[in-house]
Image (cartoon, rainbow, N blue to C red; front, side, top):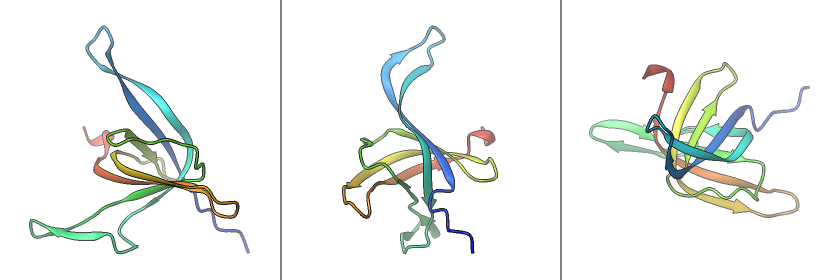
Amino acid sequence: MEPVNFYPQTCVIRRSSGQTDVNAQEMFTTVYEGECGLQRGGNGNTFLQGGQFLDAPLIIIPDPAVIVLTNDEVLVTDENGRQMRFTAEQAESIHDAELAGCTVWLKTGDTPDAD
């Protein structure tokens, strides 16, 4: 039996540098780049808003040393190559010998390909 991969997606977390380039595009610094696990709605984090059920997705990063701030940009690529872009809402790191990582709750998600 093949072991379960808890981190099947890849993530890039970027923070605005507060500067723009010559084309007036916002510049970012990379905070984290690597494996992550995206979770959507399966753990009870769904809510009703405007007559529609929405979910509050989150990602789990296996590195507890990652410091994620509110409004950092989170780019997630799934196993099929689909890209999703979110904004970080809140993060919590767990430093434990047997179970360590960083959980990041996300908001305002979209698919950059659809732009």
